[in-house]
Length: 407
Image 1 (cartoon, one colour):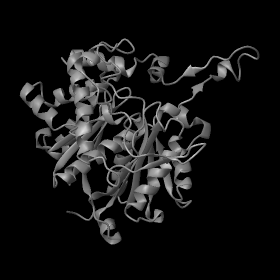
Image 2 (cartoon, one colour):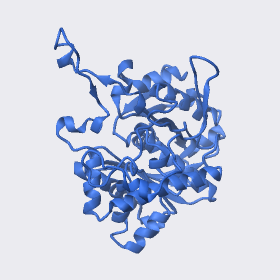
Image 3 (tube, rainbow, N blue to C red):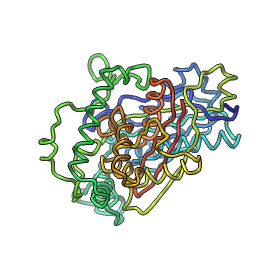
Image 4 (cartoon, rainbow, N blue to C red):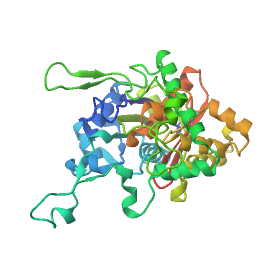
């Protein structure tokens, strides 16, 4: 242990909501305010002790009505001092793990002692938009054409393929069949249900309750993830059509369009000791990666390999693995790459990956997911009495982040 180690002292997320669920009308900014307050309350940390707040988000159209600098707005709304430094990050689905990496670097460099890495998204709250060419500078009379920025997540507008299309083609290239992806998706839901029944996703640990005001009556209390299903079968999965022309990706082996927020407090070990806080885990390394836009499914493996090579470690030495299920194809392609096409090793890696289910079941509110998989990994290592784990996530057009956590 070293005084300059970067440690996690608090980590929390909201339950993740469905596209059409109870959070559909709640602004991502408001969800973020909730988790910032809660992540401090958990350890009785004064906001004045926080040097920097990094906030990850992915779909600016959702918060566009609030103009810009959501990180700044969130910190002020959450009661942070006016001199708190904040930064909004858009690195697609990687964003809140990028926030962790930037916070880790700031602490290691001695430029900060306490950082909050956070992120949020509400994909069900994304409005339809009208371009300036068709409104502000366009037709003075007649109907206005609206566009759905969630369709293909907008990548097709500039000539890129939808990420589901790329993931499906890369899966075929790596020998990951539609049936394998469907099986992994069903496993994700089953693992979540097992974990939930075992009390792993309980209020007060990874999860905080969310109160949703209603026009009439008492507020709704949301205390569990909305997306997990228990009525899946191979036959039902096989009947689903693929999306956006993908050869393998369906609504069944992909996550939903979700809502939620997450936050993690990190600091130097010396600072934690001075504040009387017990570290939950240490962050041993962070790494980023990028590659050819088509090969997004490969980039979690590339980020993990890049990071573990620097550490002199192998993926086989990791006790647990979290690879975000942007699609089942992403997790399986990356695991097969990490296994070096060794089928026995591939199976061994699968058994210790996403052991409590992944984003296909839990949900994938894109800006929040990097921090979510990090805390899910950490809390499971804590339940097991310690160990070392690696988490990785991909982002649109082949970006990636990876992190090693030790308990």
